[in-house]
Image (cartoon, rainbow, N blue to C red):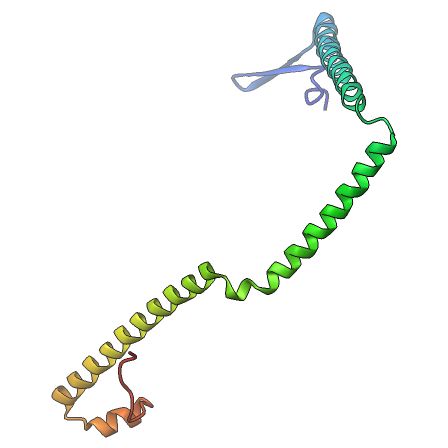
Length: 153
C-alpha cells in the first residue's frame, strides 16, 4: 500500500525484493506537486482575468436601452416568423425537385435490379427445361410465378 502511494520505493533484485524510502524523497515529491499546482493556479487565474475582461467588453454595448429592447423584441418576432415558414416549407417537401429526382433515380435502380433478377429466373427456367424436361407451366406453378411474369418496362 505504501508503494502504491509512492512513499516507499521497491526493486526486485534476483529473488529478493528490496524496499527503501529516503526522507528527502517525500519532500521533493510534495514540492514538485506544489509547484505544479501553483503553475495551474497561475494559468487559471490569468484565464479568469482574460475572460472577465472579455465579458466586460461584450457587455459594453448591451446596456438596457429602449432601442435595444425594441431590437430584441423584433429579433424574437423574426425568429418566430422564420420558424413558422420553416414548418410551412416542410409541408411542401414532397414536391421538392431534388427529392423527386432522387426518388426517380432510386426507381430506375430498382427496375434495373428487378429486371436483372427476372432475367436470372428466365435463365434458370430455360436451364431446368433443358436439363430436367420440366414443363414451363409446372416450373411457374412450383415457384409461384404468374402467367404474366415478365420484365418491367
